[in-house]
Length: 254
Ligand code: IPD
Ligand code: CA
Ligand code: CA
Image (cartoon, rainbow, N blue to C red; front, side, top):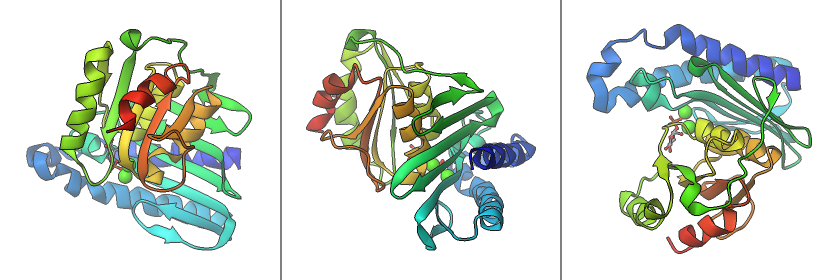
């Protein structure tokens, strides 16, 4: 199964690359570029679903583009075929393919592939997190004033609420980055490129492989009240563990 998820995520990413920066028209559309580019989300979604069905016809699926396909509930594939559609449309290389496998309710494998920056992330429960086959660990920074944070708003964007959170957090840290792909943001916490990533109303397909990746890299993932990640839409904090309670305190009331 590990080999399968690796091959599948890489193949999906390489199909995306066949289309990346090919459609100049998307840039001129700008405000509607994300909608126009979702044809690529759907194309890759179908590609991934067909491959999973051909190999594991009895498994259940949850994909951003096609919803829930119920089969054997013990096995569930969670798929975001193109995470960072807006970036893809704007010819920005920060986009990824995100695939996770859940067995009996537990995240078992997670893969995130950002083909345009040549970064393939893999996490296997109990066996660590890897970037291009090299073991990765979260950062060791324990002070807010030395921290870089990532953030994004999930669905149902509430910029007022995001503004409130940023007002609390931004003055206290070195800087904040918004990359436009939740998959890459979670992966970068796992790789120690920042101390934490927080997100509001995010969907399971955006972050499922990232949850396993951050945990396997030695980090922590909870909702804003400190409860472990659940496979449903919510507000979540991913961190290097050392910074978790400090940042959670800032997010808790927001
Ligand atoms: C989006 C990205 C973005 C996040 C949005 C997601 P999509 O995924 O992960 O960073 O802010 O909430 O929907 O739509 O490009 O797959
Ligand atoms: Ca997404
Ligand atoms: Ca998507």
